[in-house]
Image (tube, rainbow, N blue to C red):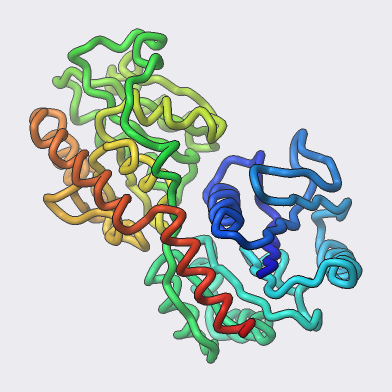
Length: 366
């Protein structure tokens, strides 16, 4: 099979969609299928054609602004398909969607982002607009049951399947980390990790409020990610006399993230909206117990009292209590970490996710 993955967000960007397409594309290629990614020039990655692992990456010079992006991407795809006969196009995210109409190739769409839910909340007029954009799509995939259900509720009549994000279980695995020593973390200090963009929908202010309630504990709080909420977070920690316990790493490239997870003891997902959290999967693969909210795809990751705890979104008191249990009980952390790693191996390896995706492709190419 020859597959084309179309996305506006890809390596070297840091984020969920970019990481998903990198992981899925490589796993599809490793399964023996010719795989192309069609994206944009991003940061220092500007070659028109390059290789990333086993995947051929195309970066046509197309402006990001609509409607020019849609028009020119459609034209580029039309010319590309004359020389490279793909069996399937798999669109990731709404931005490239319109460009894949009337190309004579089956089109699959993965609805990634929780931002989609904000669009839906605008009402019936928005629902009709989205269904019109999806009219040429053969199959919709969604990385959370919530997103899958929402697509059907707004009136899309085609098939919809839940397929979660995946993780590279060989690259993300338990090991020692030099980061602890580099950042002066004492052996008896428990590291609580928040690995995500510091934006409102990720619940980062609630997390900051929660950890200020843990002042008496021997902890360090590591923030791996950056964003507009960082100033508010720092102000909260300073006011509580906790700023010296915090380490702000800023944005970390994905190839360095295994070291970050390995420096931690607990990973927290305090989100208000979330699909199948990639940072949650990577944390679990590295043997970390999770504390997460009962939203989106997070309950698919956390089996209560087995590999972590689920708490209501927007509740810093309950969040703090769950984190405290793990900080104070080393055996509980250890056992939940082992369970987290095993759950990822059983359900969320990229090999498993890629095969489920390939099975969907085959429904429309055979």
